[in-house]
Image 1 (spheres, rainbow, N blue to C red):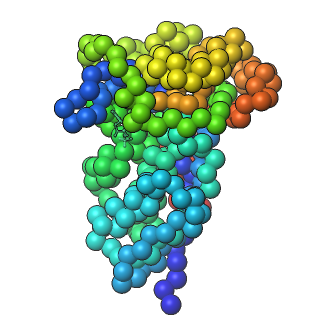
Image 2: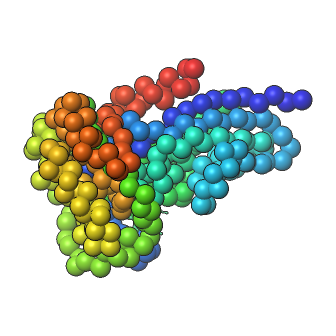
Image 3: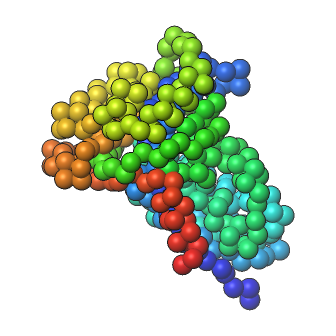
Length: 300
Ligand code: C5P
């Protein structure tokens, strides 16, 4: 009998430090300007593979995830490599879904990176990026990690000078926001902002700025529409600000609210004010740390 090969990897979550949504494009997607940041909250995925005459991919965690992106990622990798076999995935979900933390996208990117490793084959970076973009707008970011600029529909990425390591508090109330519905709810005036203008601003900030200097740049265009629909999120955002967060924002199209603090102790103290709301303490993960986490998984 052919034995399984196995690997266990972490799929980390992201927050958007800044998220500007511009016009709706002819392909139906919106033009974005965003700064992504990896955080320490993570899912855990075990992947097993054995060569078989026919390809089957099953998610043993039976989470019944809607349009399971991790399963689709595994199918895409096998197809791209022209390999047939049995893949078994087991997802230990810690990143809440429908929260704007990119959990499903990160799981998918983790499978895109881990499965070729398991097969002892390599996929060129451009092929991986193409597969990632086909799975979802946020998936390519997780091939990169750290502090990164996202343009176009979010899949055009540039690493930025990394945000200094800092601590944060994440509120994850049980509200599921559908990304597509959030975009539809925007109905805002078209705003002209060139990619160059945004890129220069974020590049300049990340080179030398403190959290305080970042704060005015950190806006999220989804907040007004989402807070109008879910006033409790607006209240949590305000409470986070009053709890001393240097930057307090909603991430992605919601519903999670994060706060970044001057110290770990300040984040811990703030957490005491949110006993009734599901929450996590986290730290930001820069690009070298992200790469080390991946290297460690493969080494193990
Ligand atoms: O790419 P993804 O599958 O994550 O997008 C989900 C939905 O969110 C899209 O079908 C689209 O309606 C909306 N979207 C958008 N503009 C983007 C990203 C997503 O309008 N840049």
